[in-house]
Image 1 (spheres, rainbow, N blue to C red):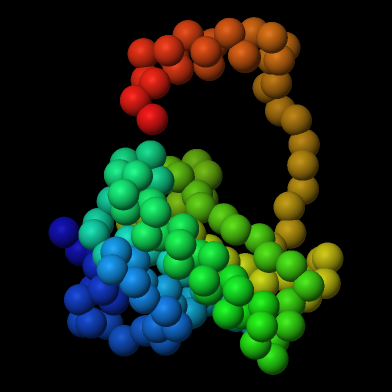
Image 2 (cartoon, rainbow, N blue to C red; image 1 turned 135 degrees about the horizontal axis):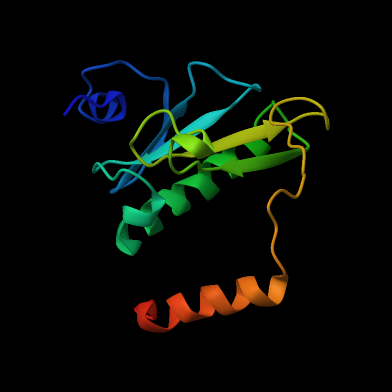
Length: 141
């Protein structure tokens, strides 16, 4: 398997590591969309958030919080943050190793910009019924 994030964990590729814990590592994005844009990944390879075990998610999101707090109290002084994880090509995932972006915001139109638009949206009651039918057998969490 050829995974750039696994190579960073294994120190085969250098990275600007800014934090680390038992199960996750955080480093600056080499193609940042704002100053301080960081990526947090589990040290073990999981394709996406849906495949990542809860025990590993705890390490990842503990580090997401630590990184955001560190950036918040640095001289960068962002006004806010976007937290982003894409799953699948259609959602914009380019590296198939689960990761979370921590994107500092310094102005509304800087960094990550989102436009909202409803497309192919069904009635909310129908959507709710479909989700709840699938959720009942999955109640393992």
